[in-house]
Image (cartoon, rainbow, N blue to C red; front, side, top):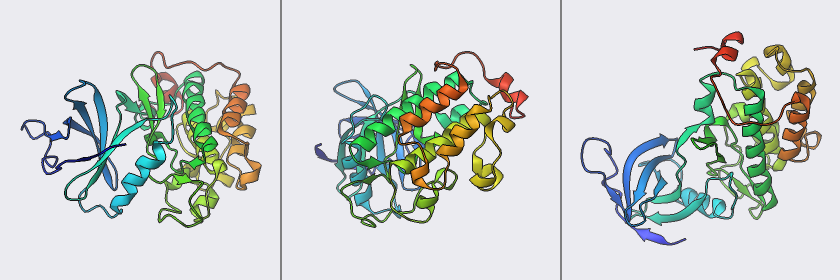
Length: 296
């Protein structure tokens, strides 16, 4: 990946009516997301006329500048249709780094869930693709550590892609070798991750089980307190078969060695329990959402 020397001074205030600023060959069109330490912009390459997403370290962010470039190096090792691809990275004269990624026109799974509970077939469509992305990452020694609906992008063309490897752990890193151990999103963190212990593939399997539970019921297990005391999914959503409860319980096991051996195996077991085939979204989910008391 080349390192472009550019200025980020024009980025602040984007969308205020002035001409869209340039970041190297990229014209920044709008901010499409922001987190604790970085913001993401939709941009267009002036020569190739293609849209990209550009992630920029926010001014005065607490995270060190090396974290964003580390994310680029980790994510660049992944080549999979269900992972948002990292295409390039750069550093501004003031030392501010940025990453150039594929742009996914659509919305996040978190946004989708605000519309209501997806049908089981749609849940499987999304879960199978998240699982494929995770299994690929695990095969090359990368643990995502922040699998959650906000980091799953649903393209308008039906694609599903896993994003944001900002706190991912690479196998080559020593225990405690990165300052982000123990970080994550509490509702989706496995017990070992909350304790600051080294994460493994089973840590992502746990998080995926939480996401699947949420897609099937409209809430996470931690909405009810602890996973050990959370109700079976079929008691939250009476349209689910009871067989899915044991599968999700295995995925949410407190001990990593009690969980399914891979993300793909977890989702395959969920599919068998549901007894339906995966299918992309169709129609409105609001009827089911109302029946579950989640309608808007």
